[in-house]
Length: 338
Image (cartoon, rainbow, N blue to C red; front, side, top):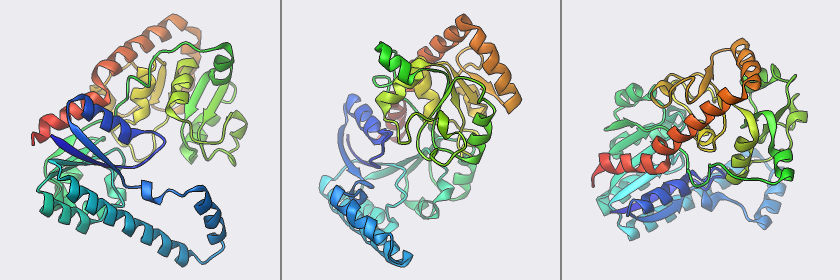
């Protein structure tokens, strides 16, 4: 089967993980980065600095032009490749008329996998009749998508790459830099500020962007995106990895859930109902429902090393067995059966 992947060039490497999994399943794969054509070179970044002083309408016009050019490239390459399946990882800037033309010219099936709330992007919902299969990370959205006219809606949770997220040995310098009693990885928002603000009396490190202006900025060793190999070091060296979901996760859980577990890290996550069908709560993962419960469990598990390690190992085994990108792409192939 020939698969044409459309995905973002993102620091989390999800597009590449999907590509790798399909290749390992014996598929012929071609990747088109739908955001790649909009990434600036160094010179273009300098020019963009000048454009920030121009009217917003001018910048909007430039963005629209870049997206249009990207869609034109997408259409040409997809038609040239003549795939059996077009697999779109999100794709919020892919135009409906482009998908329609590609579908008519190639006769390929189109599947999309959403690990965000798709209803945040009305243009995606308007493409309902073009998607043969719609995979979504959160079971909450299944009924909504069916009601919106989507065909073949399937629950497909997020995943991990077990080659990247794994137990590793590190130097003393690395353990010192990446290690802490408590860690959190992710962007800042009001809810995360509130939750993490309740843990400031612990040895805590916060990793990710948008913490520069936060009242918790002193807990953040770096003010940038953290790449997967660094994430793995953080998860390996944190006694407790806190997971605080974005508000768009209603029942579903994020990639971090599976990546922390695959790294062998102990995870304390806010409760989402889909977790019940993915892990054994209190045996493979631990959940909290409010800040008081979070503080109680942080205090308890920092004092009970053996119990914490046992849960972490069980979670690692479960994630690496059942929740990899290979598992997810195998499920896609099984359902699509082109």
